[in-house]
Amino acid sequence: MTTETFLEEHEIVFPKLGWSFHIDPTAFTVFGFRIQWYGIIITLGLILALCYVLPKMKRFGLDYDRAIDVIIFGVIGGIIGARVYYVLMKWDEYKWDWKAIINTRNGGLAVYGGIIGAFIIGYIVARIRKVKVLPMMDITVIGLLLGQGIGRWGNFINQEAFGVNTDSILGMTGGTIQRTISNNMQIGGDMYFNDVKMLWEDPVHPCFLYESAWCLLGFVVLAFWSKHRKYDGQLFLMYLSWYGAERFIVEGLRTDSLMLGNIRISQALSAVLFVLSVILQVMLFIRRKRDPESMTLYVNTEESHQLIEESRRKRMGMSKEDAKIDSGKDLDILNDDDDDFDMSELSILDDDDDNEDSSDEKQEADSSDEKSDDNKEDK
Image (cartoon, rainbow, N blue to C red; front, side):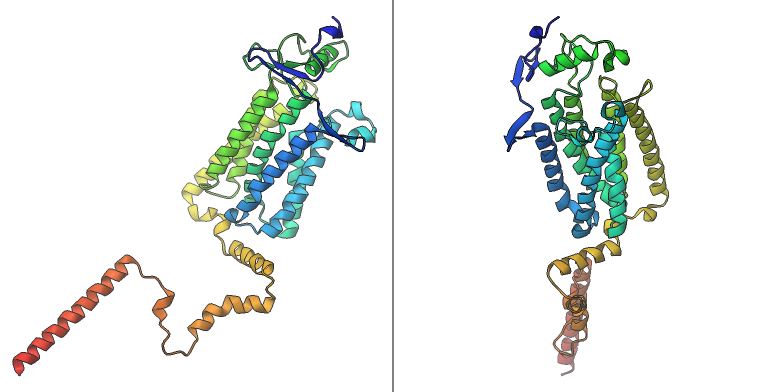
């Protein structure tokens, strides 16, 4: 076997579909600094996720100005957490090489590390900014699925996160994939060490594609269900079960899993999260059946309405005195001495009320007519 038999390094092929691509992981160079497609795609996923999440804050009863702080710091925490998680799991490869540790342009971000980091930092900032955590997590995970679905295509460009050999119609291969398999099947390589049997000549599972499709489908499902959610935190639990189920299966196909002994860490974590989220959903479903009033959505509370209104007035540049006047103007109307003021202008009658009033007016008219007839007879 020689390197001459490999595909060109940046060539990606789907043999049974007849598709072939030639994609350089470096998108362009600025002042000698290479900008990678991986980073561009991750950033694009993040931007689109934010474009979806931010306008939906009010639907979850969240004040935009406060929630944006949680998101910003959560994103920072997610990036740091994703890298730290990955580096710690592969510490032998990084060992105090600080330049390598902070270099994420060629990949090396762990999804679960990102989720953990985003949750920890986001939770701290949410407490400081007085943002309700459960509804915040509900809206965040919808955007997270969108970002994950798009971000996985960075793995496609880098020819990483692929699976074992397959004869599936979706099977793919590439120059970098073939070289990775060849190198790691050598004595001392990761695949050799983990007893993974691979042939560099054969196509592999496009795990990035499976996860991207599943996450984008999950985004649609959760976005739809967000209008019908029954309690705060429901979408977050649905995310854990939805993503956990997929990751458990796909992780079993991958050749680059982060390992703890003979255990695939992400696969084990996925199983735990899936089981716990399903149990919690069942328990909360039963609780809501027994006592619906105990699970009122935050968006329907007075606290939520007050915070959103305060934020609206602040954006309008209203002072505290102006806000008091604005909030009390309806009461001022009620105290107006104008004799022409009609209290009925402040309410809208139901159809039944309208019918009752019409009936009363008709009865009064009939009574008036009868009295008029009696007077005529007396005369």
